[in-house]
Length: 168
Image (cartoon, rainbow, N blue to C red; front, side, top):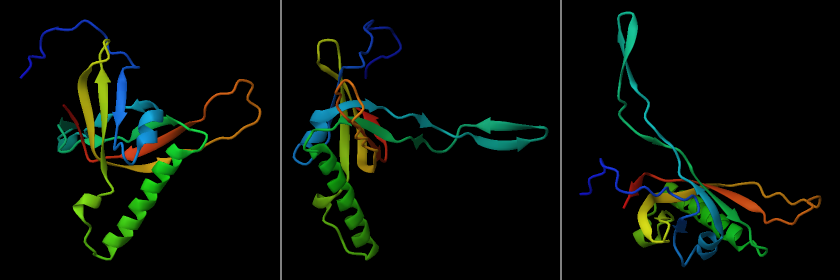
């Protein structure tokens, strides 16, 4: 186990040093066109114990994970949109099948781990953040407009839920 109590590295984490991996066979475009990813916040609601004139607070009994958001640049063939949209359609179909109590082959799970590899200043992986059993819950609005002076790529937000995340 590494002793994290002493200062060992004085380099600051660069916001551009990351790589997103989901499933290269199904989501090659999403992995390639991911422009940013927002590591979500984690909260724990305290347990409140009434005590005479003032409440006493104790640590809560569960962690609440916020949504994971990936901002992806949209390719002109909209392949990245199509990948995520198809994933959402498969989730709906799987949900309907589960509602009828049909068994699903574990190899066909519609959930995937999302791995964000954090890179150091030499572009070497120093840490992985793995979001377990992730699935998309929202593909954000895509705005087409003809009044933009400088042509810029369209950025598409993708919101996901997951069961937990771990550091490796």
